[in-house]
View (cartoon, helix red, strand yellow):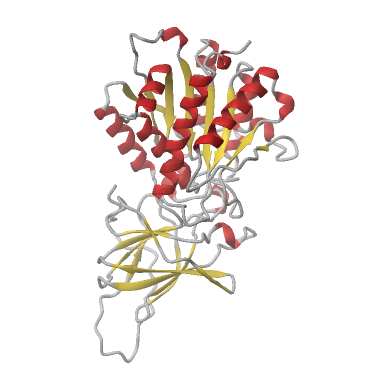
Length: 414
């Protein structure tokens, strides 16, 4: 998606004095979808840009940042120095080990050199072979990208149907798709139902990229992907919190509600209510078996892992199916981001709102055999890239295929 904006916002220039070398003047832009940056200073001579996230704390943790730099002399090295936003949020959330940048309008995302921490700030250097570049906390996947993805898949594959899950509170469409490839070899009534979604927390852009890896694999020529398409009907939502993603806000712990604490009897967000309704209808029809919510975890979590529902909420069939699915995932998510062997329950000790967490709502409101998990894919490593994330997504698909293939009717309950 082309993120080139029309105007220049939020620009502060510190002029170099006493130099005889004429350079184009660096400028910073933040007036485009998913942008967030408060510019502290732009040092023209050294190429140092000092900034901090500019998200509204009421709209979630202010840890996401993204901006465009113009006026670059191709081949020049720029350094981005990131300070934390005001407030109590630890700087580590806004300061990944590596930052992301793009020189082709956001089509391709590269990594900067490893960040260097000093006095509570972290600096990222990158040699830019272009006149403009986009810098971000991680590889950007915005609402426009979500629309482009579902449009592309629907145009390329006759078995893919796009739909609008809901209109957000700000009136934005929430794009989604259903992958439904019928086969004469498979009884349609016996097919499984899967729901995969990402970005209930807007800043966790890696979740959408994991979803891209999964859905691109699912619609590929891989024989195991083709087998899964015949065995299951899959719903995929690449971005749930479209409003926070579009406005460059964090989403996590936003006021009055966090998307992933909104799965109650009366949701605040239309997209959550719509997802609940569709899932409940699938479950009532006996066509629902697996729910996966895609997230990024804390900075210290350097291996992907699953959050699972409290054990006391599962019956024997549910425990068996969860264990079988996790075992399949351990056998497939093998690198470069290797799945942790340990799952983490998110019950009352985790959050007072634990019952309104999406996967827990699914566990408590759907048939007992249904597996519901949150996949947390690590971001604070050298593999927090589009390639690293999409590889996890492809491997997740392989794990799902293996789970349904090796215990196909165990997922139907007892």
